[in-house]
Image (cartoon, rainbow, N blue to C red; front, side, top):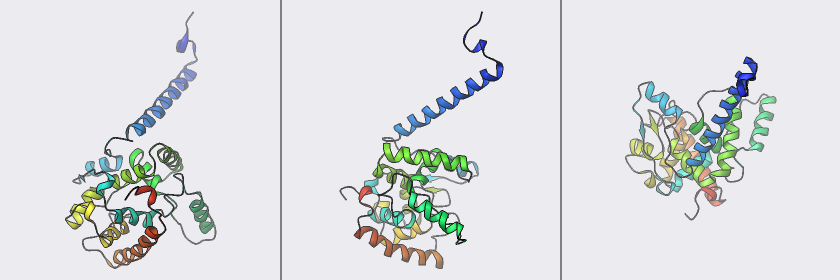
Length: 237
């Protein structure tokens, strides 16, 4: 008389093994997420894709203290003005995006900086509800275990700025010939202006749309500063 998996019908045995594998992967990814609380920004799937495609990757990891507060305010102004208020997912923005879509007012992005960080670190580019669901879960997870400052630090170290450039430090060096710590308000606004499509919108030199968007972001950055909307990511600065 057998025992364990040998007594299980082959299909059930396969399902049990699949569930064990999924469970092990789930645990492993979350342990990886905990490790990233205190380790440098990793090589992401997007970076690997760019490397496989033949691009020269340029990536320099720096702590958030070595990134200009202007850039923190710029990305919040550009991508997620409620970064310090939500828990990783901006439910209000999602509801507004759905409402606008139903009224035929186009498609409005509702992805937070935390969701973008989760996608960049754990997942891949492309659509699909399974990936979106995983992105939402990991956004909640990292917002809780990493905290706002670490989420912002990771975001600014893995964000893509086109031409194989990843992270604020590499972007500042290549685009402006300086450290990310020394970025001016205008330079930070220009970097944030191209984030939605860094391989399409250029900074060398910036076109009319990017210049105009950067000017709009500079005005928003002052609102972000004045209303303390970046305070959670700029503790003590």
